Length: 128
Image (cartoon, rainbow, N blue to C red):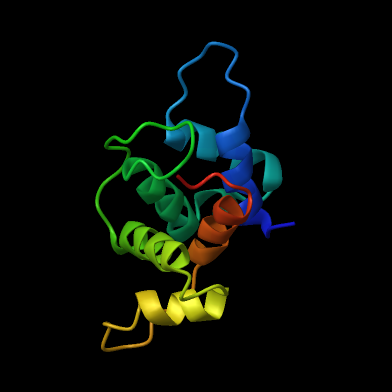
């Protein structure tokens, strides 16, 4: 089982839409609201949300069309770069992925659950 942000990504992708056209952001918001019902900070945490939206924007998430879903930010880039590493088979763990996708930074970047989202989707066959 993935951590809560990985689980949120899985829930968002697998969400029953019942004919409604929910955006990836709406899907994410509904998922984190279920997982963090009494923790607004957990619901609003940006890095995992932006990683998820970045993967959706790039057309990398099964069942979600590519498109513009949120403003540009570094977390999207980290997520998309991590998928490329997973596809290449060179990196398989959160520490390996995080170290590589942040290797160009001059300072250490704190981890914010971005790779949990990527790996949850990857391991469940939801990355295309």
